Image (cartoon, rainbow, N blue to C red; front, side):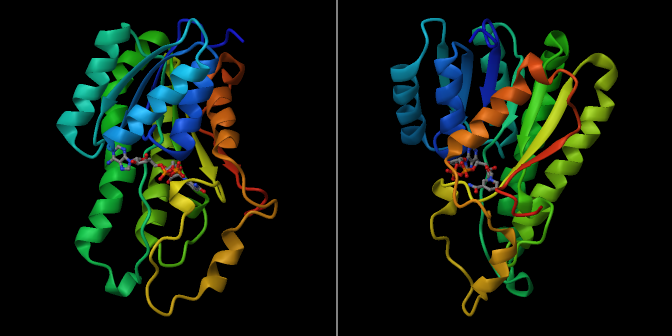
Length: 252
Ligand SMILES: NC(=O)c1ccc[n+]([C@@H]2O[C@H](COP(=O)([O-])OP(=O)(O)OC[C@H]3O[C@@H](n4cnc5c(N)ncnc54)[C@H](O)[C@@H]3O)[C@@H](O)[C@H]2O)c1
């Protein structure tokens, strides 16, 4: 595969799950990847694993970054372009999930979810756009089926992901005349750190989650990674402003 030869991709949340799987597949295809995460040890592990599968042409650069911090987000994009000299694709993958009853949700809880899932993606996108315009590049945002359909006890998460879908569409339209593409992906039931048991409010009705569950069982994060690679590749040159579900027919 040579589709990512001389291509530079910046990927957030690469220390785990979908981000790690995407980093490994890109390294195996010989891409130049700039990967980041808020957890240094997790990021180091991804670098190690990516080096094990990397094609000879692959280049891997890693940097710890909290995407919700404006200065860190700015520095991360700048460091990527300084290191590799260009940027072809930004993948906003980092995200956090938490459950609370909405009527008991603190503003601090709400803001924590929104600051990573929405502010972080905005900051990274804002910094990346000037460089992506130079390469007629692309953005792949990881949204969620929770942004398309209600997630009980996850109203903050749902709101952040619904906003990501809307943000992606707006960016796709705003820069369409300059060749920049932006798409979002909505996964569900992908086995990652995020799908490990997460604290629920007392008395939560778990039956409310059935409507958002894959009818094809659980999938590996590599399934989403494959879709990220496709959307970042030239094969998707006419796809922009799209929201693609990868949810085992959960919302079909
Ligand atoms: N797993 C699923 O079924 C599923 C479903 C829908 C959407 N998603 C989305 O997929 C994306 C990837 O999640 P995942 O399932 O691989 O979960 P994950 O928890 O395994 O990975 C998320 C990564 O993001 C990192 N991260 C968290 N906060 C960060 C911050 N402030 N700055 C930088 N990095 C940060 C974490 O350290 C972690 O490595 C997320 O946006 C998530 O909302 C996942």
